[in-house]
Image 1 (tube, rainbow, N blue to C red):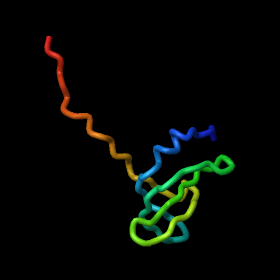
Image 2: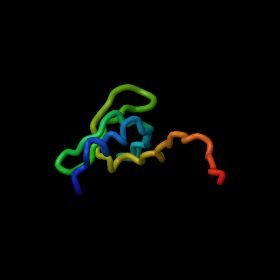
Image 3: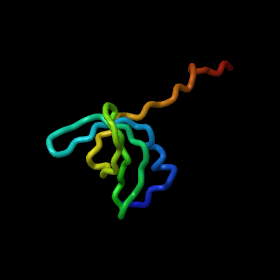
Length: 78
């Protein structure tokens, strides 16, 4: 795994996903991200409930990122 920059790690902040492990699953929000011995880990908080915990990113299925609107398309006249 190649090193991940701080900017790349920040792309995970605030993303929602589903945590699956040991036969159960629930939705979480990624609060922070880090690498630990070349393993990507997320600090997650449940959408409904309390607490937070660092877990391997391999247990999380992230939802597609929401892209910011860019405004109406403008065509050049010429």
